[in-house]
Every structure is written in structure tokens, then in C-alpha cells.
Length: 290
Image 1 (cartoon, rainbow, N blue to C red):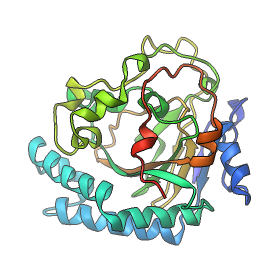
Image 2 (cartoon, rainbow, N blue to C red; image 1 turned 60 degrees about the vertical axis):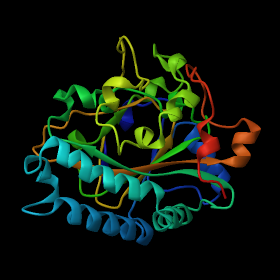
Image 3 (cartoon, rainbow, N blue to C red; image 1 turned 30 degrees about the horizontal axis):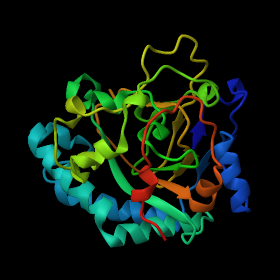
Image 4 (cartoon, rainbow, N blue to C red; image 1 turned 120 degrees about the horizontal axis):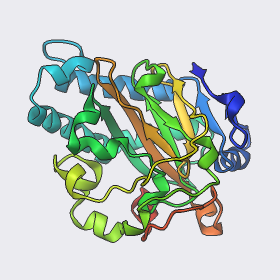
């Protein structure tokens, strides 16, 4: 495990161990701490299960990280879509997510979660106009997620910094120009959950509104990047401005993520600072609740 940029960060700390007290852990995340945690038995079991799915769908004829070169774009989208739907909807993966929560000291009885999402960042995927939203700098909260939302990211295989994403630490408390005001959660889900999660419509990236940074960052500061080993877990505030890096590694990057919201914190209005989120609606209503 290695992280870059710590010395240049003034308002965001980097930590490799969560506070034992969960309230203190949540508070640290809201304040901007990015936690990168060692693999646990729960994350390792989940990684093994998902890799088995990937192998079954994409492993014929070679390594799964090179499957994009063996399948047509249409066939790859269909195969990935089947996996995405299973991970998001099947109870056994909800249970596995609960185990990951427990392994980090989060009580499933008071946390709602938006289920597992399989992320697929193809080699040179940034050149595909349909995939453009993948590479927008954004805050997860711009999608009508609560300010107390915590994003959990799990590496499915070892990744170098250029295969992951970057944070812009200076902008947790600084507004940026964005189009979140155009995002209406009710409209977003009206077209069906398949479009929301990405298992049905290959043109969604060109037709739906995915909120993102507009106008660029004139003074971005030093981005924070990271490498990770399979099974490592990243926790960060959904309000962090972050961006997927263009992948030119010659291989596809696969990862998992999900979101949680502590229901007590949500009710009390606790969470990371809201400096520029103007999205409408409340996605937390459709999280899986205790």
C-alpha cells in the first residue's frame, strides 16, 4: 500500500487505521480523512466471489483483465451487465457487504447502504464518448446522496496509481462550478433502475445527465493518488471531489464500491460540508435499510 501527496495536503489527512469508536471514525471521514485499510477476511471473501463471477463471464480464452480485446463492445457490455445486476440485487452480496461493514466497525442496524457496484475502466476507455461520465470530476453527493454518505471502494486486483482515481483535497471545502442543479433524483430513477446501475442501456452515458465539474479547476492543488492491493478498502466522504484517471495500462481495471449512510447522522444533519451540491431529491430513501 502506498499513498502520494500527503505532505501537500493541508485540510485532509491520510490514515491507515480507523478509530475504534465508530462515531469518531465517521466524524473523521466527514472532516476529510481518507482511510486506506488492509484486506480483511470479509473483503478477501468478497473479492474471491466476484473474481469467480468475472472468470465465469470473461475468462474464456485468456486473462479477465484482457477480455476487452476478445469480446465485441456489445458482448462485453452484456456480460458485465449481468454481473452488475447480480452484485446489486442478490441477497448474498448484500450479506457480504454487511460483513465488510462489520469488519470495519460499522453497525448494520443503523446504517443504510446503496449496494455493490462493479466498476469497469477499460484500457483507453476515455476515448469512448459513451463512457465520458466515468471520467468526470465529481462529488458523489451531486447525485442526491446525503452529506453523511461514505463511499467504500475495494480493489479486485493490485492496481498502480495510474489505474485508479485521484482526490482534489483542497476542494472538500471549496465550491466548484458544476451542473448538479440539473440533477433530479425522481427523474433519474423514472427510467428504470437498470439505467441507474448500468446493466441495460449502453447509450446512457450520452443520453442521461451525470453531474460533473464544469469549466475545469484553475488551481487544483496537488491531487492525491494511491495504489492498492487486492482486497484493500478505501473509505472517504461522498463530498470529496474526485476523478477517475484515464487508463492506458493495456488492461481493464475492475473494482467494487458501495455507499453507506448512518441514519442517525442523516436525521441530525451531520456529514461532510456542502459547498456546492444543488441536486434535488433523496437517494437515501432507496438505499437498503436495516
